[in-house]
Structure formats: C-alpha cells, structure tokens
Amino acid sequence: MWKRELIKNKIYSVALIVVGGLSVPIEWDATAFIFTLMAGIPLFFSKENWIV
Image (spheres, one colour):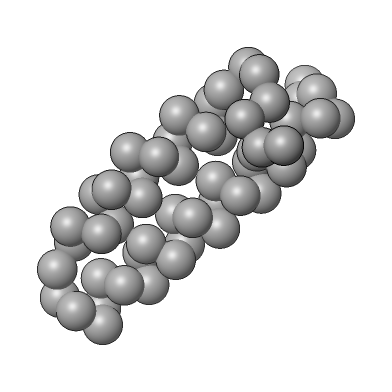
C-alpha cells in the first residue's frame, strides 16, 4: 500500500490541488489550477519523499 513517510506528500499534494481548484470559480481562469496540477500530480504519485 502506502509507505508511512510518503503520507505527507499525499496530504500536501491534495491540499495544493484543492487550493488550485478553489481559484477557478473565483477568477474564472484555470491557469493557476493547471500549474498546481503540474506540481500536485507528480507529488502524489512519487515513490520518494519530496517533503522534508
């Protein structure tokens, strides 16, 4: 399943994607959401710890 030390990666990734998703209805522009997805998706599926 998941390694215990990678849970923090997944929490930060989901938080980053949610914050980016919340910016879409406010500004009606998905540019910030796309940039948060580009950082959040690899962070979620990474096999090594990116968060110190």
